[in-house]
Image (cartoon, rainbow, N blue to C red; front, side, top):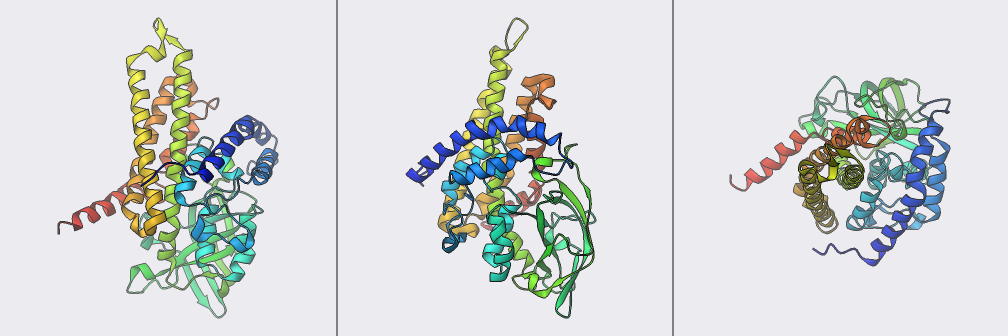
Length: 410
């Protein structure tokens, strides 16, 4: 494994670092100010579209769209490998509320675009993938439900019933990321087409549901540790009541929903972990700046032994996590998602847990400022802590990983 950045990666890193310094970091305060003046808190500030235009102009667009999913005939994506994309995603993680959106590399759109690219029909790609790749619309992935433990995808209760040339959808979803954004025009909905099927992993299917379909109600925004996550497009509770869409809106085949979900979540998990490294790096930077600028009990906070230990431990942890994430990216490129299964689960367990701890220490060093809106740490902490639940909770990945290890000895 050679983790040295190649020339293409170095070039893009340099451009992206400059883009962050010149455009993204200054835009954080501007976006906050503009949001206060919007008619709806879910509308996007003007600065976001300006960032998107500049990113596209500089060739920093759709970087997540790795080789095997790119559409070279349409000129979409940068054609990077996962290993090339990893350090770029890390940089965007330093400003997770703005940078991924500016580069059209934000969840859940990235996963939805990959699903459409891999499993969508030509018509579905034309109607939904192309405007998503162009950044003209946003999307949502409707899987989690309030009435069941959605950590087990076979528990999903939403029904997708065939009726002639249509499917009729009934169910209730919540924490559907991005759904409050008025630019969210399409939902990928997971439900059961064969609830009594013998194979519990063949009961589910995925289907495309346009936002304006009758019977689809975006009921309310869900908070995350008190945050409404406006810049991410919020997290909504949605009710589907006799929602009717053409049978041609089915993604893949009936019964393929579980497999599609697994294919979707693999890259999504590693993208989150890449960005988490960037969040940790920003936390370390803020912690160090704060520690050298404040005094307590007669000396700089940076001279306090406990704070020095926190900083040292944070640096060691980040270096370890980065190597594991890079190894995972390399394996995904060389052995495929299945070949990187153990490592994908390992980084999903280790990264959010460790980054939450680093952010917590950074909050502690900032005192009251750490939990305030004047610093990004509290919101970063909420996002990192949520990732111990999103894309499968820690315990599900630990269970699967342990079984894989034990299998060697059985």
